[in-house]
Amino acid sequence: MGWGVYMLTEEHIKEGLSRAYVLAVANRAGFNIAKSEIDYDMDGMFREVIIRENRRVESGFSIDYQLKSTTNVKFAGEFIKYKLESKNYNDLVETNIATPRILILFVLPKDDSQWLNINYQSTILKNCAWWCSLKGKEPTKNKKKVTIEIPKEQLLTAETLCTLMERVKKGEEL
Image 1 (cartoon, rainbow, N blue to C red):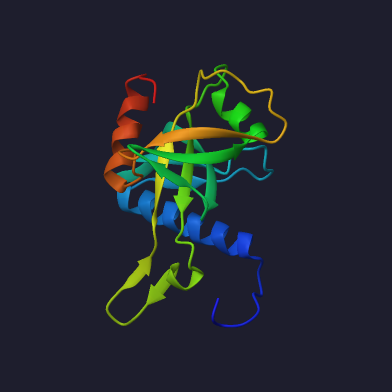
Image 2 (image 1 turned 90 degrees about the vertical axis):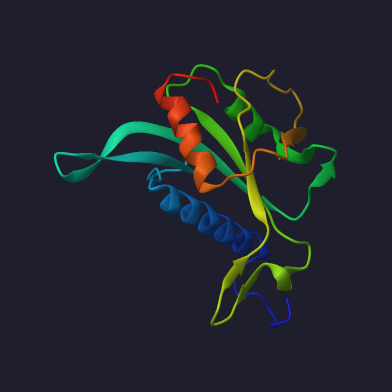
């Protein structure tokens, strides 16, 4: 980074930028975000907000998410390949869950000077995030990492998030 020494670690900067992206998408979609007091593997939860009797309330429908940020992915045809830690993978393939879970992978440019650019006309946070559900996949016995493939079409946007929540409300798998 051209500004000298990081005050935060590079990993913490990536994490903060990825959280900002997810918050922006959730807010644009009209959802609230919840975070558990103690971190037991899920980074947050999208919570649907509805209008009931002229006031806004949470409906009870939600989606848990695990958030990862990286500059290291491989674009291969219609997929993004990413090496996910085995412990996170096994949390996400679990089938005995009440709330649907997704992985959100926020991909930053390799050049950190491109991560965030601000001027009086725009704020540009590069690049973007993709989502996937790993529910029901075979758990891994790998000790460190497992390579997953995320379809490029599964870009996380406000519209996508609304569609995912509608599927949850219908009882459909993600």
